[in-house]
Length: 154
Image 1 (cartoon, one colour):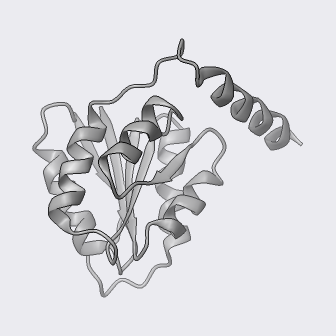
Image 2 (cartoon, rainbow, N blue to C red; image 1 turned 180 degrees about the horizontal axis):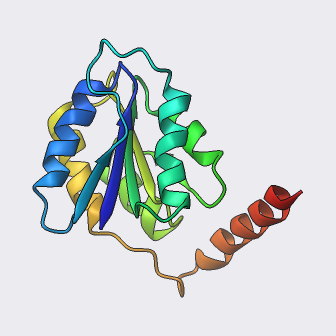
C-alpha cells in the first residue's frame, strides 16, 4: 500500500510522527510526503490537502493521512478532488466505518484535537480495513460516485 501524507504548519509535527509510523509498517510499501516538513512552512492546508488527494486520484497513492489544526480543512480540501473520499476520524469506530461503510481512502486528524499516541493507534487500525463492495453501504457509495462523475464532467 502506498500512503501519501500531508499537513499544514499546525499539523506538521503530528504528520511527521504518523509518517514515521507508516514507514515502519510492513503493510506500507511507500510513504509519499507532500509537506510541510515543519511548522515554519506556512503553506495553507488547501494546497496540501489537494496535492495529497491528487496523488490518490492519479493512482500514485492508495491512501492518505492528512493533518491540520482540526482535520476539517484538509478533509474538505481532499473531498473536492473527484474520486477521493476523506473523513475526519478521532476515534477507532469512525475510522473503521470511514473505510468499511464509505470506502474512504483518506483519514484526517486535527493536531489540536487528538494526541499523537491515539492518532498512531487509529492509523494502525485504519490501515487494516477494506471496503466490501457487496456490503449494504455499497449502493450508497455508488450513488455518491455516480453524482460526482456526472457533475465533474459538466
